[in-house]
Image (cartoon, rainbow, N blue to C red; front, top):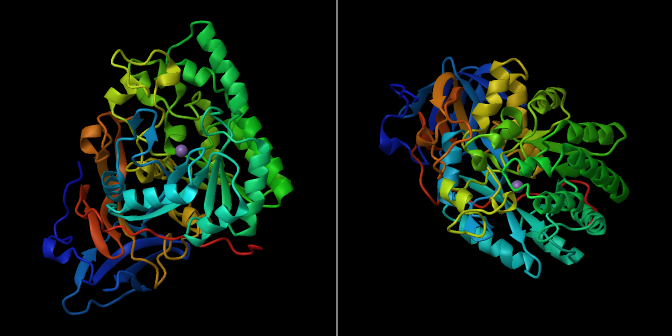
Amino acid sequence: MCQPLPGILDDPSRRGYGSPVLIRGGRVVDVDGDRSADLRVGADGRVAELAPSIPASPGEEVVDAGGRLVVPGGVDAHTHLQLPVGRVRSSDDFASGTAAAAVGGTTTVVDYVTAYRGEDPLAALATWQRWAEPAAVDVGLHMTFTEAVPEATVAACVERGVTSFKLYMAYPETLQVDDGVILDVMRSAGRHGGLVTLHAENGSAIETLRRRALAEGRTGVVEHSRTRPAALEGEAVARAGVLAELAGTPVYIVHVSSAPALAAVRAARERGVQMLAETCPQYLHLSADELAGPEGEDFVCTPPLRDPWHQEELWQGLADGSVHTVATDHCPFTSADRRSGVRARESGWRDFTEIPGGLPGIETRMALVWEGVSAGRIGVADWVRLCSEAPARTFGLWPEKGSLRPGADADVVVWDPAAVQSLDATALHMRTDHSPYAGHRALGWPRLVLSRGRVVARDGNFVGEAGWGRYRPRRPRPGARG
Ligand code: MN
C-alpha cells in the first residue's frame, strides 16, 4: 500500500552497516525539540551529527526527508514472541515478530521471559536469550516471576541486564502471586535498581466470576469480558499503589485498559506514589462489541476489550501524562489455534476460558498511536515520548534508544504522515492470518527504518535480516541501594 519513493536508498548494496547516511530536510522530533534538521548516521551505526544543515560528504548516501518526520525508532516494552500458552504458542517468533516491528517503525522490543513455578529463572532467561538470537532488531528482556524468589535471584537478573520484573495479580492457577510476594519482590527489586511491572486484575474475584459463568452455562466468547469487569482492574491498580507506597519503590502497570484503572493510577500519583502506566493500541481503538461478532475469538485479550467510552478516557490519560507509555502486549495466534483453544481440541474450544488470549500489534503500534496525532488528541512530541523515549528511559535503554542525540544508536524512523497503509493481515508482516484492524487504512507509516545505522525497512517492506538484532542488557535505575 506504500508506494516506493524514488531516490531513497534504491541500491541494495548500500543498505549495510558501515555506509554513512545523511538524512536531510526532515522535521526532527525528539526530546530535544521539534525542528527542521539534517541527521548524519555514522559508519559505526550511531548518530554522528544533528544540525540545521549538514553538507553531504563525497560518497555519502543522501536521503531526502522533506515533508517527513525523523524520529527515534520505536521501543515496544511489552511483547510475547513465541510464548508457549497451553498447547499452542504465540505465532510470531523473534525473527518474524521483530521484522514486522521494523516495518512499522519499532526498532527495539522488550519481551517477557516467564519463569514458571519450580523453574530456575536464570535458566528461563538463557532459553529466551537463545530464542532471541534470530531477532532483526535489538531486544531486551523482562523477567516474570510466578512465585517468591530470593533477593539473590533478583540481583543475578539485574547483573544480566534484566532490570524489570513482572508479577501477575491474576491467573491464580499458573501465574498469580499474592500481595506478600509482590511487596517482597518490590523491595528486592528496589534495592538493586529494578522495577516491578504488574498485571493488575483481581485474579481471585475473577476466578469466582468465571466459575459461576461456567456453572450457569454461560460459555460464549463475550463471557471473557463479562467475567473480568473493569472494577476489578481498578481495584488491583489501587492495591498495587498501596504496595508500592509501602515498599517505597516505583511501580509500572502494564496494559491499563479501563477508566477505573486509570482513575486508580491518577489517585496513586496524586498522593505521591511513583506509578507509571502503560496502555496498548487495542484499548484505544477496539471495544468489547468485537467479542460478540462472528470472529469474536480473534479479539480475546486480557485485560479484555472494554465498552467504547473507556477509549476516550485512555486518550485523555495519554494527553495529560497519566499514561506514561504505549506498548503492544503483542501475542498473536493463528485463527486455527484460537478456534482449537489452548487445549488444542480438534472439536474446538468448549468454553471461553480455553481461547488463547492476546492480539497481534507489534507492527501497527506507531501508526495506531499516530492516529491520535492526526485526530488532535495528542501532539507529535507526545507520540515520540509515549512510543519511544519514555519506554527507553523507564527500562534502562536511554539514551542509546529513544533519542537522536549524537552517540545514540542510529535507530531512526523517517515517518511519512501522508503514507496510506492497509491494516489487513495480508498487507502486514506479523505471522498471523487475521488482523484486529482489518478494513482499516492507516494514514501515516514509515518510509525508512534504520536499526543501528542499517536500513531494515523501506516503504512497507522488510529489508533487514534475521540475526541483525542484539540482546541489549538494560541498566538498573539510579538510586538503587543494593
Ligand atoms: Mn502481556
